[in-house]
Image (cartoon, rainbow, N blue to C red):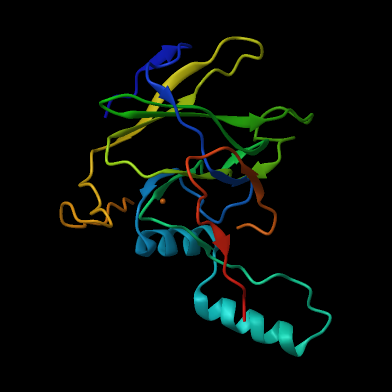
Length: 221
């Protein structure tokens, strides 16, 4: 895998926007992981790992909430994604410090590939030097819903650590091309392209996207 860093320059191609972004500092995934998710099976497994709770635990929690009027915790629900038309790029940073989440800086698509660039939303804290003192422990993550594509996806992170300096893009992973999904009116055989990677406090942002994404939350019950 090539992990070469490049100075700031926008890749050629048309601009793509994430339809939905779910990000925060408190995933239960404690190791760095990158995923291109294109099937319900992969999405369910990765979401459960991220939330740190099985469906049986969720069922018990819902039952407890019904029995205890003082239990105001929300059941942890799996967002519904229309994987016929959309896919999810999942990024888990693992254990780190002083980060509130991830931001998609740019997403570009040309005839050959999609380039997805992101950066960490970091902040500074004061404390004793050494032993990681003074920093807030986090497990930052980002889940980004994009229009579905069979093209390779290159994921690059801004590796620039100096405030005020231009971004330095470092390739983290390249997802290979996948078989296209069969169209509703025929086409090649359908083949799921899911590739495999809690929060009580998710930051969500919605942006423009071609066509209304079918993304919602199933109600617990």
